[in-house]
Length: 373
Image (cartoon, rainbow, N blue to C red; front, side):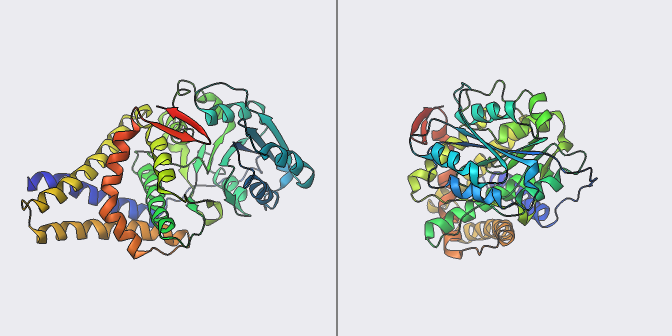
């Protein structure tokens, strides 16, 4: 039993150390400036009247030349004043702003909205974010510079939660930092796993060349990861993580645990649609690690393992995970909360296993709609 435990956890510890190493030693890329691209920012929104105005203002303050920027907002049947706010903003911004109602069909409104926007986009680059996000002044400049690498066709960047003083918010900061670090590191390993739809960009020609979201219309989530995986499968060298503070996107943290679990169920529902076998195997391995951790706790409570052995193994786990999370949060200019980190150490494996088991065939809500995967 001890050998089996170590056979699962030892590779996991090695993996996390590799992710940490890749994070603190980002890969350098070649840049060949060939003029500025025209950028189409795509935002699919539903009921974002409280947030969309701030994002549109952020885009109007970009250092990137606004004459080379258009923003396309696809309104997904909002029942509030989102559409009216976007319309009224047209006269106050220096970039071309257009808004249209979603007409593309499909079980995934966001994929349909992005596809619709891409058909009318004039940009060389399609830059996607969400209506509740905030971006810095250098966001588009950083993305544009990343695409100066002639091999680059997809760029996904860092995302963090907006500053929160609540303990629950600090827990979410740690989890998201771990996810961002994992996405960046596994790409370097040649096993692309995670990215975030709040900060992903793609060459418009490549988006159409890979078939857009053809065959993925019934997968509710995955407008980000599934697209990134599809491009990686056709050209691994063309996908890049952008570790640049200027490219950092912030989004609001969840106020309730039920909202967080609902979002994670939505995210997890796309795992079965992964088109890369290596990524599926990685997801299965991570699930096995968390299931093993729970079993380890149970066996220790039953006296099969000694308390000393349990504490020794858990200490290694905490150290390697702390190294990764602290590095990512330092990049985000955040401080890691030790109490929140310890709570996650105690509860996260149970949380992951429950999400993994309930996401298949379960249901979740998004923007007032209920979906069943």
